[in-house]
Image (tube, rainbow, N blue to C red; front, side, top):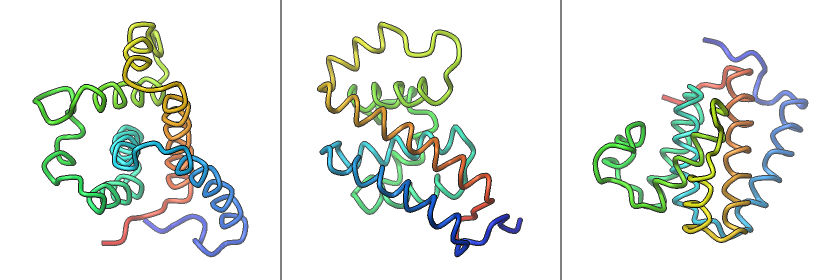
Amino acid sequence: MDPRIPADDPRLAAAMEAMRGVEAHIRSTGLDPKLAELVRTRVSQINGCAFCTDFHARAAAKLGESDRRLHALAAWREGGFFDERERIALAWAEDLTLLTGERVSDELYARAQAAFSEDELVALALCIASINSWNRLQIAVRAQPKV
């Protein structure tokens, strides 16, 4: 499948530069980078973005994430691969990505408040919103992972 817009197109470059500004802000918040990459990978799986799934799984691996946990990420609710804080972050990511039904339940929000500071919750929500935007942009232009 050929890309729809070349990577060097100035309009795409300008949009991506704006998105990189959001990413820089997320990094400045102190949100755990490994947790952020797990969340980005999971959201990219949900959205079916092969480019972003590949990119963020590799980024997580560079931060020390194990292949075993990355392979289990799509089924994070099963097994004991992820701790409670990670499970809350992944549930939060899924609810903010899918936006169906009850959306984020009061019960999940209470669990998230107990596991994360308010600053971390805002940073995590922005991280989720950002990767959803990246996914949609990369899917729209048909970005492909390098094989």
